[in-house]
Image 1 (spheres, rainbow, N blue to C red):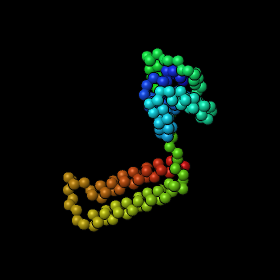
Image 2 (cartoon, rainbow, N blue to C red):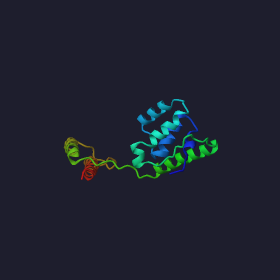
Image 3 (cartoon, helix red, strand yellow):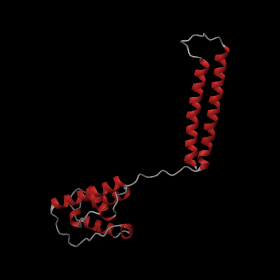
Image 4 (tube, helix red, strand yellow):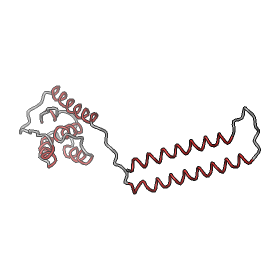
Length: 180
């Protein structure tokens, strides 16, 4: 983690202070409740920041998972340019870690949750097959003009039926694969 001193955390707005403190101590972005709590606690009072630093640095999460932050009393003043560089390095390192982390894997749906969907898809496929066969029968029953320029309607309908079946079968297989 980027090195930053307690004094260097003091430079900036209340919001920046809380975010940088979380990044420096807990190595994570503040949760909404913690952010609101600590921002309200310091509310423009620069002297309250030292107490908030000690509170967060001694929290159970910081003790178990966090980085150590020495908070001397009194806090010596920080050089503003160095403080801004340290804060930028802190945030850049966090963003780099976030960007290089593997994407979260969505939990697989339990088989019992996908079974009704698979049954529904199979029923839709069967209904589509029936409908296509009925339409084909209606078309075949009526007189069709036979011309070399007009393709055979039965072949066209069969091709459409095969394409629809293939698409539906791919969806069903994909769902079955995800549920196993």
